Length: 375
Picture 1: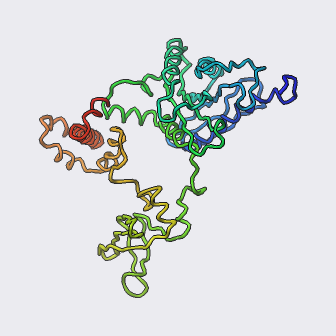
Picture 2 (picture 1 turned 120 degrees about the horizontal axis):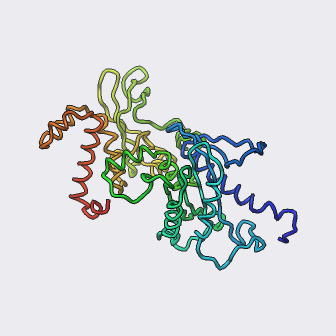
Picture 3 (picture 1 turned 180 degrees about the horizontal axis):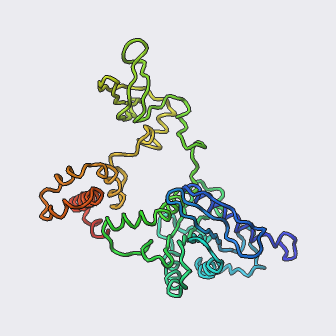
């Protein structure tokens, strides 16, 4: 396109808007509510939009930057791009400075996309260490107000339009935030508490990892739920195949799926306290949803711990159960501890964390000592 072409001036704004939409989609997936800026107000510089966390209620100022690359998304050599430049992080500091130069009344979320090729989707990207070094260098020269949750991404969907599986990468960095996404040895309890402190940042990273996986339905339900045949743990139903006079009302307490037989085995408790096991044939659509979502098909999170490889995730999974265990019971579990008197004065929440941490460490010691050394 000629530099004097009337459309030439809108190419870079369009490129930035493309990435803004990706960021907005990820934030919505992470549970944020978005608020647009008043662009008619020329008295100050504006961010892309504001984002309010539904988890914490915290409001954030959001800025999104994307590296321009010659020949990609309309970028031409009139813009001074270097086609031989292989360092995708070359303009990272400049993008970061541009975002920090705008006044922000709220905490900052800064997203910078490197718009780079994926050379090996299974390997650590070659830009990771370079990006960290640039961020570390910028952090050493921070002013007091220049703190931000920074997310460096490479989401090059536009480069591989004919592909169905595209690797994507994201790096989180706490600029001026020493206890977010910094490689410091910590106990599981310390890591858990810091995760709760910075939960908004963690939820954003989870959303970036999933992007752009689309839900099957607009309301988040499974596709097979529309049949009305799906049984959910914790719900109460009228079961016509048990009892007299049209069936019996019972609450589903447990469930499992036999893929070979194509049926679900459902544990129920009736109103008069009877515990029964029922069998329900499943349609092909229901079986497909079960294969994709596991026990979520039955309305519950995976309770057997399978697929958990990270010690912190294992700790959190255990804590979901033991956070509800009475204090007296937890003290019984740890009755042989030489510091039992000190444990007895702690609140239930602290005891649950201590006990779950010990369970994880004991498990790793027995089954995966290498991971114990690296955690």
